[in-house]
Image (tube, rainbow, N blue to C red):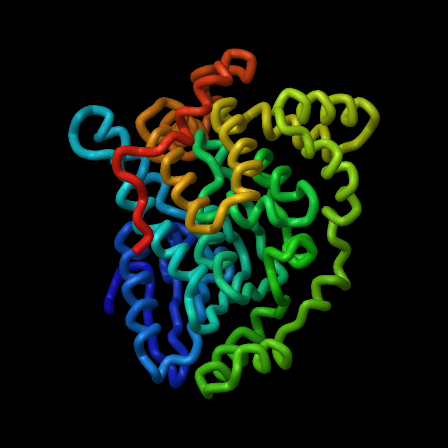
Length: 355
């Protein structure tokens, strides 16, 4: 299958996916999601394919996420009555995330550079995640009026303590040592060894044996994990079930000299108040839900947010005009009616189907 921005090759016993849209940091389009999912289905049925791996053709980015500009343009057109909201991209993306999560054959992601949003979806949902030294993971959706999705309401609450809540509410970028510490990455390897890993998989060697020889989990442990040093204070601050208490704790801790607290408050002050409130509830509800049900919950939320103001204002401020000065509606947490948050989680007339 030939699809712009992504390549699919069967190399020996390996199904190899190469993200190849470097000019857009490998941002994923609806066509790319569909092609990826269809190819995984074909390889699942192909007895010659023992494993699947995904990599980037560019050292700068594994994948920056979904194509936000496309969503922005199509969403604005829909709001003008010129077509439907671009929910089909999320449907394709979430079905791919679910297929990766439940894939019966070993699935490996070789990740170096930027891995955000949708890039996390096609890596962290897989069985093995091999981190290069320049990995930069983040779920920064609250800054553009959306919420962490791609199944993150399942995997973030299951990180140690409250680290997942912290990452979801602040959009903080973390590196390899923290990814290994949290379990977002399963192994570490220098990108110079990625080809050797792929060659061994193509030769039919078992994935576990290949990773034991070419990658390891101790490499990142030689690097200090910044989150490990902050873990106790993060757990205390982000354990609250209401946003006001989290912010109050952080503000007090910031006055006492905890630098991470001040950075967290600053990041959250720039985010959509509505997105923050929804995200905190996601993190709490996701603890008790299956991966599939988390995707369904995320779809309900996104389906409603795409019809409102904050996403378009967030993208305008961060990506289009780049003035970094979004005018959120409502403008502050105090102005958000807590009762309005319930409706984002209510069932839709047409729910997400994952098969």
